[in-house]
Amino acid sequence: MFTLIILGLIAWFGYRHFAKKKREADRRNWSVDFRNTDIRPITRRLPWKDFS
Image (cartoon, rainbow, N blue to C red):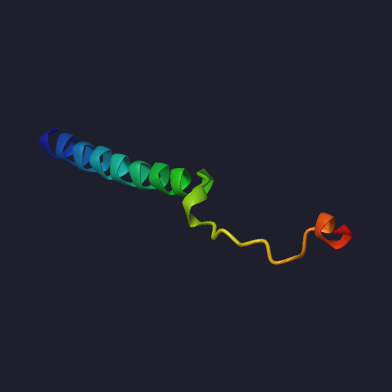
């Protein structure tokens, strides 16, 4: 009986470990980080400058 309790505890901690890793991966995959997008400068001419 003692062996079953020990095996159950090991399995429970193992399950929690992998569930935590899966939650962190899901959080990483589904989050949007706007700081990673590079800001591109506007290089085209503005149309109102053509009329002056």
